[in-house]
Amino acid sequence: MKKFNISVITTPYRAKLIISIYKSWFKRNGKALDVGCGTGIVANILKKELGLKITGCDVKNYLIHNIPFVKVKGDKLPFPKHSFDVVLFNDVLHHIDKPKQEQVISEALRVGKNVFIFEYEAGTGGKILDIVLNKFHYDDLNTPLAFRSANEWKQLFKKLSANYDYIKLKKPFWYPFTHIAFRVSKNK
Ligand SMILES: C[S@@+](CC[C@H](N)C(=O)[O-])C[C@H]1O[C@@H](n2cnc3c(N)ncnc32)[C@H](O)[C@@H]1O
Image (cartoon, rainbow, N blue to C red; front, side, top):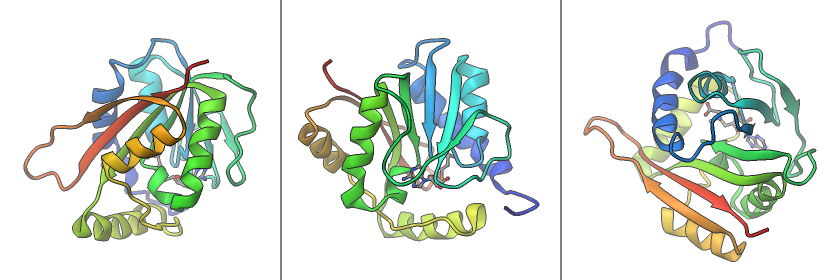
C-alpha cells in the first residue's frame, strides 16, 4: 500500500453518490457485508451515515480504516446462509472476469437477503479511465474491464431467477461516469 493514498480525496465523493442511491433501500441498523471493500473508506462512510453494522471482505487487504475484515479466496464467501441483511458490491464486479460474475452474485444472494450493486456503464473513455484511476488508487488491482451494460446485468439477474430494482444516477455534465445501481433479491 502506498504511504499517501489518493482514495482519501476521490472516494468520499463517490461514497456520496452511493449513499444517494442506497439510502432509500437500506434499513437503519442493518447488517451489511461490503464485498471488495478496498480501503474501507466507503464502508466507514456508510456505517456513519446510515448506521450500518458493516463487515468488509476482499481478496486483498487495502484497508486504511479499521473495520471488521475477512480476507476471502476466489468465489466463496465464508458465511452461513442469510447472515447479512445486505451484501454490497461497490465498483467491484467489473474487476471480476465475466464468467465468474454469475457465481459471485449467486454466493452473495446466499449469504445476504438483498444484494446492492453499484457499477458504471463504460464506453472506451470510461475503460481507459478505469485503468488509469485504478493504477493511481491501488497499484496492483486486476482490471479486466468486465463491464456490462444495464441490460446485460438485468439478463444475468433473470438467469439467476432473481428480482431486481434498477436506478441510473443523474450526473453533473462534467462527471465522466454513468453510474447504475441494482437491488437484487431472491424469493425465499
Ligand atoms: C475499485 S476497488 C473498489 C473498492 C471499494 N468497494 C470502493 O468502493 O472504494 C475493487 C475492489 O474489489 C476487490 N475484489 C476484486 N475481486 C474480488 C473478489 N472476487 N472478491 C472480493 N473482492 C474482490 C479488489 O481487491 C478491490 O479492493
